[in-house]
Image 1 (cartoon, rainbow, N blue to C red):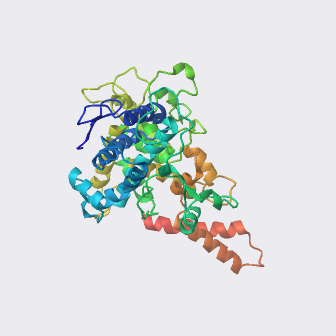
Image 2 (image 1 turned 120 degrees about the vertical axis):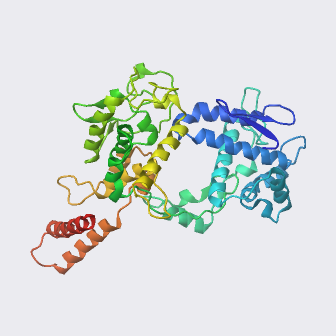
Length: 454
């Protein structure tokens, strides 16, 4: 960066290169981000947001929004709004300010998807800065110890009224009950984000490869981790935080990680670990993945490094031998290493199509939602699969819209239901049971699936 220097040791700090002075508003933001939001966000979110916002400050200094010049609020707002175009157009822009800044900072244009992430980070900073510090000029941190509640909201952050097409699009992709269209009338203010066409493709790990993945795991530890995600729906952060005391070998049950020690406050050790919350403590594991996990666990416990730690997964590296993995490395580093191993296993065992991409740890959690929606049969119910609300509880989602993205109906299940309905209509007026008709259709479906697997 040309105008600012990011010191990324512990909580990130930003300094002006020209003067060496700390950038107060950025440093106040990262302090708040790491100390107040870290436990409620993904493990990598604070580090990503702070790096993205630091790049935005470099742009702000280059374009004169910050520095010795004191631009009018109108000029500053207009320049800040150009940031999205600066990211996507860069030196190719027809706008003189964007082209000049991009050339000076050596910035190449990025795709809309990447730009949307950078803009989201900056908007988060702007809203937090305004909400926490009530600064009308957006950047200078209020250091007097009192909040200026009488300052008006900056024009840049004024909520924007969505167009009719935008409102319809949001409503179409949102689970809703009753008439809630007015809820989507306004969008939060901030820098306009570039338009991104999102692919609604399934991200769950392929059912046809899941057992092969578990069988080909490089060691019992990774086999345990894969099974906890695919069979128990755990987030990767929850996997790394699993403790021996969370597992009952006799009853073969697992409890989800409790890093805030909500179940037993007396155990609080002050370690800040990510936690998104769950309604239930027990991990509901589906077969055959439950049996696979406990078999792999027995193997792993035989080779697990000697330690007094209660954490299940222990480092075997020389520099950190015997220490809990989750305390030995940043969560982002652990996740990247885990995904590299997962990717290698898939490529080494022909689980990836030519030219295709390997699936990540998050895909294993998607697999759990997909399996629960399409493959779990509860005795006494007349259909296969759990309800969305049930899956939401099992996966620990705060918003059922997230569950909908994870637990999508398989086309084959929908086809089976349609086939049974059509057959029932053809038999209308006869002495047929609807459950019998559906059972016959699913029986034929089972034969077809078995034939495919042969």
